[in-house]
Image (tube, rainbow, N blue to C red; front, side, top):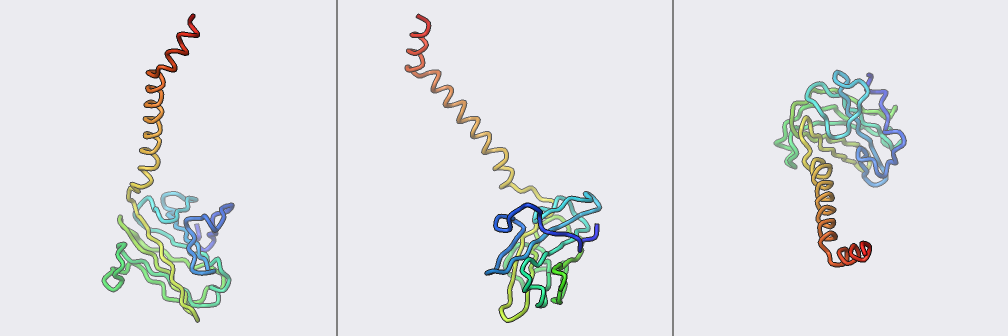
Length: 175
């Protein structure tokens, strides 16, 4: 797959798309691809495997296409950029097609993608990438929350079965 052919998620409103970052009225959209594993799969910030990864940034705001835009990937999630290890760096340049793309090899861990747009008002967008990591927040919301719901229903059922109201109602129906 040619990474330049990527586009934002079709049918998803930009206001709620987790792959979109806003600074004022300007928006960008990040997509990540690993065609060596899944030819058509598109990821945002949770990348399932290590290895060659194509990163594609769609410049949603047409004004961003007229200013130099660059992309940098640093290892780690910390805020100390001076000490961060740069994994890939695409110097700011003009992108009249509205697509900034590049490829790099990513090992397991956390990375920050920093996109900068130069101009009268310099803009800076950031994404936190998780490569081949378990997202415990998603795990909790997909397993623990439904489990708590089932436990609550069992507890309520138990309380209902033990209630005097249900026993009296059952006795009236039997007689």
